[in-house]
Image (cartoon, rainbow, N blue to C red):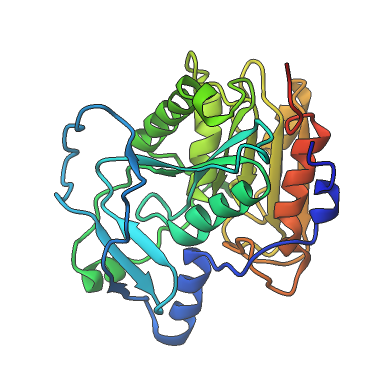
Length: 313
């Protein structure tokens, strides 16, 4: 099924990531200020947990929605995670499922650019997608105060880049999301043995951490890391197939080596790595005039080449 996917390598849709928007705004006028926006229609968003979670220290009672430079939506102060299904028509379903984890430095989620738009693209190509709105760190409600906090920068120890830590509540939500999809797979035309996860930047860190956790019933069958850190990290005992994409001019992770991929391969894991000449950080799947635009079709082709889009009896 879906044998045409290898011809989709050059496909994509107009998309910008919150990270790229923020970088552009800072270059023009200093720290970008998030314009407040109304929360979108979330009637299809399903609470990830059956009971409300206890509050984190310093968290705010209400989510803050906004945009940067009147661009795509972002959300801050997420305290109650949700999962939103984007399902292909049953006649087009491949049986594969992908949980989509947006990025945003664990301070916000690029819920449009690295979330819903990606999920819709996957569903349009026969892959059941599940947008994960995971918990993030508390930040000031006031957009001006939030902007003054600035962006966290990568740390270096003894001249060596330090892998930034993931946010434990986000990891917990990722683990819960894999279990949520698997427990409902049959009713959504999903093969419970073909449930993977893809993340962008901080979402990639969350995705990797979910695989590293090896929690019972929550081991992803495959993972995608899009402009996440590639430096050395712990590898799961049985590493799942891994797809990774990064640009050489990524200001955050483009010059930190590929120790993770080397260790993954040494542990017997399958990897496919696309290192693009240009694209920066947060290139999403928008046409940016570089080959980084090609990753969505390459990811889909990779799924097919690993037998993840084929019906299984």
